Length: 111
Image (cartoon, rainbow, N blue to C red):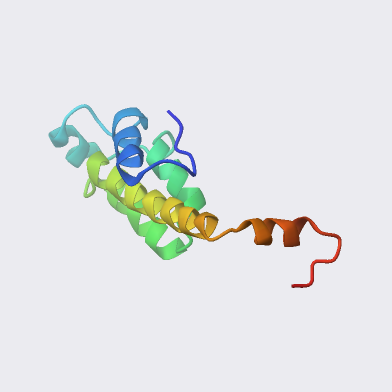
């Protein structure tokens, strides 16, 4: 499933929750005891790219690998991050006018 720049917030949530492969264990009890595997968890891999705060990412990794954070909680973090990025892109894209495109494509980029 693809999360695109045209995806709605709800579509992003559904796709991540349904299709993002998890590094979590088969039960909550097992996950709490052994923790998750960030080396195969798709949500974590996306966060490695999109989360700019290294300390926050390190805390997420520590919590997930220790079992303090569950897969659903990790996916929720990613969903909120992607929803924000996509929404911001969509707002900027909606502000582009024909005049903006003409100016960008012209040889003389002065307004």
